[in-house]
Image 1 (tube, rainbow, N blue to C red):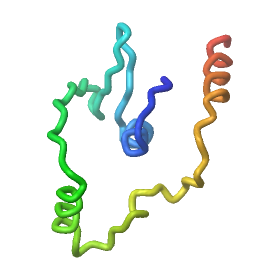
Image 2: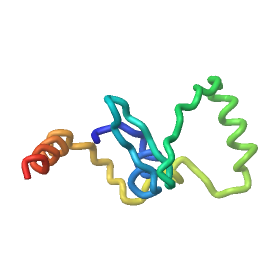
Image 3: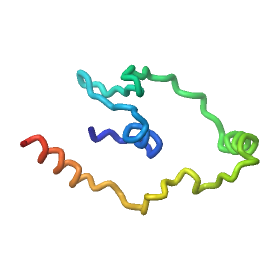
Image 4: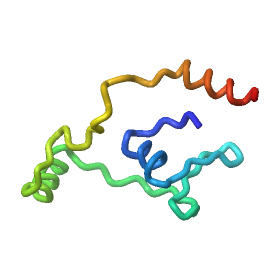
Length: 94
């Protein structure tokens, strides 16, 4: 689909059972049950200090650090857009 997602949401689409579909020039997402996820209003912005204070209050007793959310298989490689597009067109001609 070539939709740009952050790592977390990319993993949900590939491994979490969620789906990304294009309908009438619109991209929509579906949950594990095939139900369309509606757009959510933007959250109120918060400062970095407020976010850090919340994080420390919530997770102070857990062994979580800056590397906890980094996938263990990620080696720093970047997306090869040329390859992705070539594979897309290769599959269309079959």
